[in-house]
Amino acid sequence: MTDRMILFDIDATLLTTGGKGFGAMIRAGKDLFGEHFNAEGVDRAGRLDPLIIADLFRVNRVEPTLDRIATFRSAYADRLKASLAEGGATALPGVHDLLDSVMTETGPTCALMTGNFAETARLKLTAAGIDPDRFPFGVWGDDAREDPPSRDQLPGVALRRFADLRRVEADPARVVVIGDTVHDISCARAWGCRVLAVATGSYTRQDLAGADRVVDDLSDTESILDWLLS
Ligand SMILES: [Mg+2]
Image 1: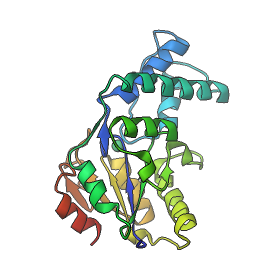
Image 2: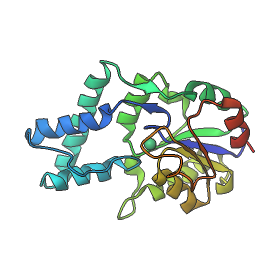
Image 3: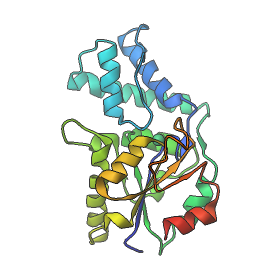
Image 4: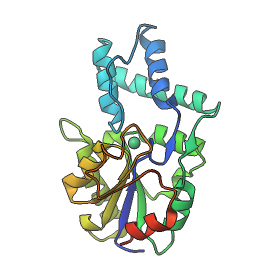
Protein backbone atom coordinates (compact mmCIF):
# COMPACT_ATOMS: atom_id res chain seq x y z
CA MET A 1 0.00 0.00 0.00
CA THR A 2 1.45 3.36 -0.98
CA ASP A 3 0.58 6.84 0.23
CA ARG A 4 -1.07 7.55 -3.10
CA MET A 5 -4.82 7.95 -3.52
CA ILE A 6 -7.06 7.97 -6.57
CA LEU A 7 -10.54 9.47 -6.27
CA PHE A 8 -13.06 8.31 -8.86
CA ASP A 9 -16.13 10.28 -9.83
CA ILE A 10 -19.04 8.01 -10.77
CA ASP A 11 -21.48 9.46 -13.34
CA ALA A 12 -19.98 9.73 -16.84
CA THR A 13 -16.58 8.73 -15.43
CA LEU A 14 -16.99 5.13 -14.26
CA LEU A 15 -20.42 4.52 -15.74
CA THR A 16 -23.46 5.85 -17.52
CA THR A 17 -27.08 5.20 -16.65
CA GLY A 18 -28.26 6.77 -19.90
CA GLY A 19 -30.06 9.49 -17.96
CA LYS A 20 -31.85 7.11 -15.61
CA GLY A 21 -30.44 8.82 -12.53
CA PHE A 22 -31.93 12.19 -13.30
CA GLY A 23 -35.03 10.50 -14.75
CA ALA A 24 -35.62 8.81 -11.40
CA MET A 25 -35.34 12.16 -9.60
CA ILE A 26 -37.94 13.72 -11.88
CA ARG A 27 -40.21 10.67 -11.47
CA ALA A 28 -39.92 10.98 -7.69
CA GLY A 29 -40.84 14.67 -7.94
CA LYS A 30 -43.86 13.99 -10.12
CA ASP A 31 -45.08 11.20 -7.83
CA LEU A 32 -44.68 13.33 -4.71
CA PHE A 33 -45.66 16.78 -5.94
CA GLY A 34 -47.65 16.30 -9.16
CA GLU A 35 -47.11 15.77 -12.87
CA HIS A 36 -46.15 19.43 -13.39
CA PHE A 37 -42.86 18.78 -11.51
CA ASN A 38 -40.07 19.50 -14.00
CA ALA A 39 -36.34 20.15 -14.31
CA GLU A 40 -36.50 23.30 -16.41
CA GLY A 41 -33.01 24.85 -16.46
CA VAL A 42 -31.60 22.63 -13.69
CA ASP A 43 -27.94 21.79 -14.40
CA ARG A 44 -26.74 18.45 -13.07
CA ALA A 45 -23.38 17.40 -14.57
CA GLY A 46 -20.76 17.19 -11.84
CA ARG A 47 -23.00 18.76 -9.22
CA LEU A 48 -23.89 17.53 -5.74
CA ASP A 49 -27.25 15.77 -5.46
CA PRO A 50 -28.33 17.96 -2.51
CA LEU A 51 -27.77 21.04 -4.71
CA ILE A 52 -29.63 19.49 -7.64
CA ILE A 53 -32.55 18.70 -5.33
CA ALA A 54 -32.46 22.24 -3.93
CA ASP A 55 -32.67 23.59 -7.50
CA LEU A 56 -35.51 21.21 -8.40
CA PHE A 57 -37.47 22.31 -5.33
CA ARG A 58 -36.87 25.99 -6.12
CA VAL A 59 -37.91 25.64 -9.78
CA ASN A 60 -41.05 23.77 -8.73
CA ARG A 61 -41.79 26.03 -5.77
CA VAL A 62 -41.57 23.22 -3.25
CA GLU A 63 -40.54 24.41 0.19
CA PRO A 64 -37.31 22.56 1.12
CA THR A 65 -38.15 21.30 4.61
CA LEU A 66 -35.85 18.60 6.04
CA ASP A 67 -38.75 16.12 6.05
CA ARG A 68 -39.60 16.77 2.45
CA ILE A 69 -35.96 16.46 1.35
CA ALA A 70 -35.64 13.13 3.20
CA THR A 71 -38.86 11.84 1.62
CA PHE A 72 -37.67 12.93 -1.81
CA ARG A 73 -34.27 11.30 -1.33
CA SER A 74 -35.85 7.99 -0.41
CA ALA A 75 -38.43 8.17 -3.24
CA TYR A 76 -35.59 8.91 -5.68
CA ALA A 77 -33.65 5.82 -4.52
CA ASP A 78 -36.78 3.63 -4.87
CA ARG A 79 -37.45 4.83 -8.41
CA LEU A 80 -33.80 4.53 -9.39
CA LYS A 81 -33.70 0.96 -8.14
CA ALA A 82 -36.81 0.05 -10.13
CA SER A 83 -35.54 1.78 -13.25
CA LEU A 84 -32.06 0.20 -13.13
CA ALA A 85 -33.63 -3.24 -12.65
CA GLU A 86 -34.69 -2.93 -16.29
CA GLY A 87 -31.05 -2.39 -17.33
CA GLY A 88 -29.39 0.66 -18.80
CA ALA A 89 -26.37 1.14 -16.53
CA THR A 90 -23.06 0.43 -18.23
CA ALA A 91 -19.45 0.77 -17.19
CA LEU A 92 -17.64 3.15 -19.56
CA PRO A 93 -14.84 1.92 -21.86
CA GLY A 94 -11.73 0.73 -20.04
CA VAL A 95 -13.19 1.11 -16.56
CA HIS A 96 -13.16 -2.56 -15.52
CA ASP A 97 -9.60 -3.07 -16.81
CA LEU A 98 -8.31 0.12 -15.22
CA LEU A 99 -9.86 -0.74 -11.84
CA ASP A 100 -8.45 -4.26 -12.00
CA SER A 101 -5.00 -2.92 -12.86
CA VAL A 102 -4.84 -0.14 -10.31
CA MET A 103 -6.62 -1.79 -7.36
CA THR A 104 -3.83 -4.08 -6.21
CA GLU A 105 -2.60 -4.86 -2.75
CA THR A 106 0.48 -2.69 -3.20
CA GLY A 107 -1.26 -0.02 -5.24
CA PRO A 108 -2.85 3.31 -4.35
CA THR A 109 -5.95 3.69 -2.21
CA CYS A 110 -8.84 3.94 -4.66
CA ALA A 111 -11.94 5.66 -3.33
CA LEU A 112 -15.14 7.14 -4.73
CA MET A 113 -15.78 10.88 -4.72
CA THR A 114 -19.13 11.80 -6.18
CA GLY A 115 -22.12 14.11 -6.01
CA ASN A 116 -24.33 11.04 -5.50
CA PHE A 117 -25.73 9.92 -2.18
CA ALA A 118 -24.14 6.71 -0.85
CA GLU A 119 -27.26 4.60 -1.44
CA THR A 120 -27.85 5.72 -5.03
CA ALA A 121 -24.13 5.48 -5.86
CA ARG A 122 -24.27 1.86 -4.72
CA LEU A 123 -27.32 1.16 -6.92
CA LYS A 124 -25.67 2.66 -10.00
CA LEU A 125 -22.32 0.89 -9.50
CA THR A 126 -23.92 -2.48 -8.84
CA ALA A 127 -26.14 -2.13 -11.91
CA ALA A 128 -23.05 -1.37 -14.03
CA GLY A 129 -21.22 -4.45 -12.73
CA ILE A 130 -18.80 -2.53 -10.50
CA ASP A 131 -18.70 -3.85 -6.93
CA PRO A 132 -19.05 -0.83 -4.62
CA ASP A 133 -17.41 -2.79 -1.81
CA ARG A 134 -14.11 -2.83 -3.70
CA PHE A 135 -13.64 0.76 -2.57
CA PRO A 136 -12.53 1.22 1.05
CA PHE A 137 -14.56 4.41 1.35
CA GLY A 138 -16.57 6.96 -0.56
CA VAL A 139 -17.10 10.68 -0.30
CA TRP A 140 -20.71 11.54 -1.11
CA GLY A 141 -22.85 14.46 -2.20
CA ASP A 142 -24.01 15.16 1.35
CA ASP A 143 -20.46 15.13 2.76
CA ALA A 144 -20.00 18.79 1.80
CA ARG A 145 -20.96 20.30 5.15
CA GLU A 146 -19.85 23.90 4.77
CA ASP A 147 -22.39 26.54 3.88
CA PRO A 148 -22.94 26.78 0.97
CA PRO A 149 -22.06 23.16 0.15
CA SER A 150 -19.85 22.65 -2.90
CA ARG A 151 -17.90 19.89 -4.57
CA ASP A 152 -14.71 21.79 -3.72
CA GLN A 153 -15.16 20.60 -0.12
CA LEU A 154 -15.11 16.89 -1.01
CA PRO A 155 -11.34 16.33 -1.45
CA GLY A 156 -10.82 17.63 2.10
CA VAL A 157 -13.19 14.92 3.36
CA ALA A 158 -11.35 12.32 1.25
CA LEU A 159 -8.00 13.38 2.73
CA ARG A 160 -9.41 13.01 6.27
CA ARG A 161 -10.87 9.57 5.52
CA PHE A 162 -7.57 8.48 3.99
CA ALA A 163 -5.71 9.59 7.12
CA ASP A 164 -8.20 7.73 9.36
CA LEU A 165 -7.91 4.57 7.29
CA ARG A 166 -4.16 4.49 6.65
CA ARG A 167 -2.96 6.24 9.82
CA VAL A 168 -0.83 8.56 7.72
CA GLU A 169 -1.52 12.03 6.34
CA ALA A 170 -2.09 12.09 2.61
CA ASP A 171 0.02 14.43 0.54
CA PRO A 172 -2.48 16.14 -1.81
CA ALA A 173 0.18 16.15 -4.54
CA ARG A 174 0.04 12.32 -4.42
CA VAL A 175 -3.73 12.34 -4.92
CA VAL A 176 -5.38 12.14 -8.34
CA VAL A 177 -9.00 13.08 -8.98
CA ILE A 178 -10.58 11.43 -12.04
CA GLY A 179 -13.73 13.07 -13.36
CA ASP A 180 -15.65 14.23 -16.41
CA THR A 181 -16.57 17.83 -15.55
CA VAL A 182 -15.02 21.19 -14.79
CA HIS A 183 -16.30 20.74 -11.21
CA ASP A 184 -14.04 17.71 -10.80
CA ILE A 185 -11.13 19.84 -12.01
CA SER A 186 -11.92 22.75 -9.73
CA CYS A 187 -12.27 20.59 -6.61
CA ALA A 188 -8.91 18.95 -7.31
CA ARG A 189 -7.30 22.36 -7.81
CA ALA A 190 -8.79 23.66 -4.57
CA TRP A 191 -6.72 21.08 -2.66
CA GLY A 192 -3.58 20.85 -4.80
CA CYS A 193 -4.46 17.41 -6.17
CA ARG A 194 -3.68 16.26 -9.69
CA VAL A 195 -6.58 15.72 -12.03
CA LEU A 196 -7.27 13.41 -14.94
CA ALA A 197 -10.27 14.51 -16.98
CA VAL A 198 -12.18 12.06 -19.12
CA ALA A 199 -14.36 13.35 -21.94
CA THR A 200 -17.05 10.69 -21.59
CA GLY A 201 -19.65 13.11 -20.23
CA SER A 202 -21.18 16.34 -21.46
CA TYR A 203 -17.90 18.29 -21.34
CA THR A 204 -15.57 18.26 -24.36
CA ARG A 205 -11.80 17.84 -24.30
CA GLN A 206 -11.55 21.57 -24.84
CA ASP A 207 -13.82 22.31 -21.86
CA LEU A 208 -11.58 20.08 -19.75
CA ALA A 209 -8.27 21.62 -20.85
CA GLY A 210 -7.62 22.84 -17.29
CA ALA A 211 -6.88 19.28 -16.15
CA ASP A 212 -3.34 17.87 -15.92
CA ARG A 213 -4.30 15.33 -18.53
CA VAL A 214 -7.40 14.83 -20.66
CA VAL A 215 -8.36 11.53 -22.30
CA ASP A 216 -11.26 10.55 -24.56
CA ASP A 217 -12.04 7.61 -22.29
CA LEU A 218 -10.25 5.30 -19.86
CA SER A 219 -9.50 2.53 -22.35
CA ASP A 220 -5.74 3.09 -22.75
CA THR A 221 -5.07 1.21 -19.51
CA GLU A 222 -1.29 1.07 -19.68
CA SER A 223 -0.69 4.70 -20.50
CA ILE A 224 -3.24 5.90 -17.93
CA LEU A 225 -1.82 3.64 -15.26
CA ASP A 226 1.70 4.94 -15.96
CA TRP A 227 0.49 8.49 -15.64
CA LEU A 228 -1.51 7.84 -12.47
CA LEU A 229 1.51 6.31 -10.78
CA SER A 230 4.06 8.82 -12.11
MG1 LIG B 1 -19.44 12.95 -13.36
